[in-house]
Amino acid sequence: MSRKFKLTIMKKLVFILAISLSVTISFGQTLTGVGGAGKYKGPFERGYQSTDYCGNSPESWVRGSAFLDKRTGLLTMKINLETDATHAGPKGQVLVYVYDADGNKLAQVASAEIGRGGKAPGSAQQSTYSSSFDLGKQVGSESASLTVVANCTGSINRWFNVPFSDVENAFKIFYFKE
Image 1: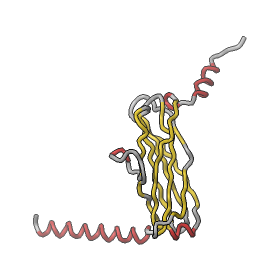
Image 2 (image 1 turned 120 degrees about the horizontal axis):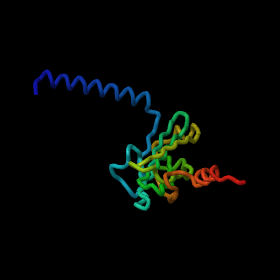
Image 3 (image 1 turned 90 degrees about the horizontal axis):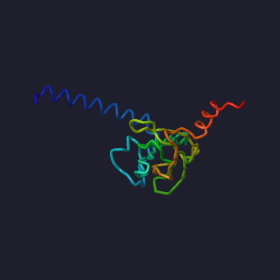
């Protein structure tokens, strides 16, 4: 490796480090959750902090992430539901635990339990939802870490994720009463 090439790489690394430090300083007020308990850890996490594998009947996953703005106390959660089955999909919930620097639990937040039915024919399908909770400025300022736990709570049997009432209404259109 030539000296000029090494210097170029070093300059780029210093530049990246400088940008990283400025981002840490300006965005240092945001806590990102870390994964808690979950039955599945692996390449299917798709960028989420916690993943729970729901099993193969139906083949599905529940994933979750959380971010806390320490200045405002606003906690933002994402829940992702994925299925490989056409006849059913997962139902689940995400729990977030907020701790102070000494490891004391300051807050516990649970998303609504949500679900989706099966996918349309083809590759796996995902649905993502988000919500926010105001934990208050005091909890925000005292917080030091978040633990995120995605939980499968069941499944929804619904072909192609179409509600049965929609199918029933479609048949009513063709029913003529004389």
